[in-house]
Image (cartoon, rainbow, N blue to C red; front, side, top):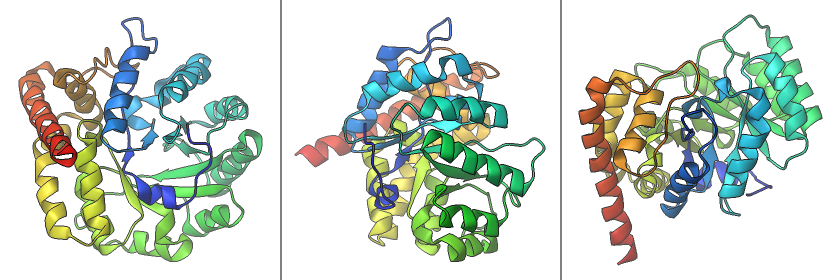
Length: 311
């Protein structure tokens, strides 16, 4: 596991956001997670973020350290593994002490929807960093989540490493809030935070450093090629690659992104993700035939791309 990172790492690889494979009794499924991680790494993706798709907000705190240790032992030495913390302050306090004994360079704060103030959240972020020795990544999904001057101050004092930006817009190319955030902390510290489709305008028009995605878990080589095309300003190539992801992305939008991804990986044959973790279920069984077809089609494109690269 990579233990030192710089801002360049945000642009070096797509940030895969995988689900967590579980056993029937909701323990971590070691072999199945290893299979998924191996598939992602074999496609050239070297950053893994365990966050919303892994339902980290519902991991038992009693198993948090154990599960992270399992994952850390499964990734390559060159892979950057990013855990998440929270979303509530009580979990953050417990998780900070657990991370203090480990070598994760950064951890993402899951979005919190309960009562909070800007100063209160900022204090908790600083306290977390002091206790854990781990920089924070802020995940922004809604307007007004944390005032931009507060974010700027967190970057300035070294508490905040980066921002995962995922506020949906009718036109992602027109986003004054993102423009203000870029002016405050720089575009090299911000990644597009909700998949390949919005990453295209975010990188084309806003110049963000990179992006996080879920479908990359099935097609890492294709997603990495998409990132490289965006970075090379080859937007025609990027647009063509994006079309390959469209069928599964449409099903994720229709049937819940987290649940459909979990089910898609199982039905693709990459790894058996097992049951969903607490508060969630697998995707609607009525969608399974379409999910399986889309997942296997995407995986076939992925393996063809790998074969072409190896030729």
